[in-house]
Image (cartoon, rainbow, N blue to C red; front, side, top):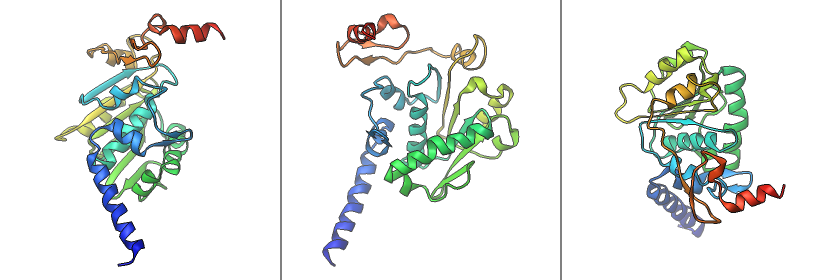
Amino acid sequence: MNQQLINLFTDRIYAKLSRQAISKPSEWAQTYRMMKSGPFSFRMFPWLREMHDSIAELNICRKGAQLGFTETVLNRTFYAIDIEGTDCLYVLPSKTPDASDFSAARFDPALELSPHLKAMFSEVKNIGHKRAGVVNLYIRGSRARAGLKSVPVGLIVLDEVDEMDQDNIPLALERASGQMSKQVWMVSTPTIEGHGISDYFDSTTMEQFFFKCPHCLRRLSLRTPERWCCSITSRSSLT
C-alpha cells in the first residue's frame, strides 16, 4: 500500500471519529459550517450558543432582525441531517419567492463555502427537495397545503411565522406526529400582539437566553437596551 493510500485511509478514519465525537449542534456548527468571514463562530452572536443546543421538543423564538436566528435553525437542520440522520421540513411563507430565495441565498452558499456540506448532499437541484444520501430535506411554502402533506419528518422549522398562512401551520406541525424523536422550531419577527409568533410565544415559558458579555463579563440578555454592557453603550454614544 503506497503512502498516498495510507494517508487517505488515515484521513477517513480521523474524519469519522471526529464526527462521532460531536454531540451538540453548537460543536457541529463550529467544526463544519463556513461563512464568508471564516468558520462559524459565536463571538459576535454569543446568545445563539444555548439556542443551538436546546433539547426542548418545541422551540418558539420571537426575534429581532439580523440576530442570527435563521443561521441557528439552518445549523440545527444540517446537524439533524448529518449527525442524527433525520428527515427535515423547512417551511417558509411561500414557495415563490421565499423558498426559491432561501435555496439560492442561504442553502446553496452554505454548501459552496463548506466542503463538508458539499460532500454530504447528493442531490440539490430540486428547490423543494434536497437529498443527503438517504436523508431528505423538504423546503416548502406555507400557502400550498399539498406541499405540506405526506412528508413525515423528525425536525420541522417554520421560518417567519407571522408571514405564513396561519391556517396551514397546524398541518405542517402534523408532519412530525408519530415520530419517536422530534423537534419543532418556530421563529419570526413579530408584527402585532395576539397574532402569529406572539400568540405562540405567549403560551410558552417565555425564557430568555443569557450570555456572558466578553467585555464586562456580566450576564446579559437582548430583552432591553438597558441591559447592554457599558462598552457597547459607550461605543454607541460615539457614533
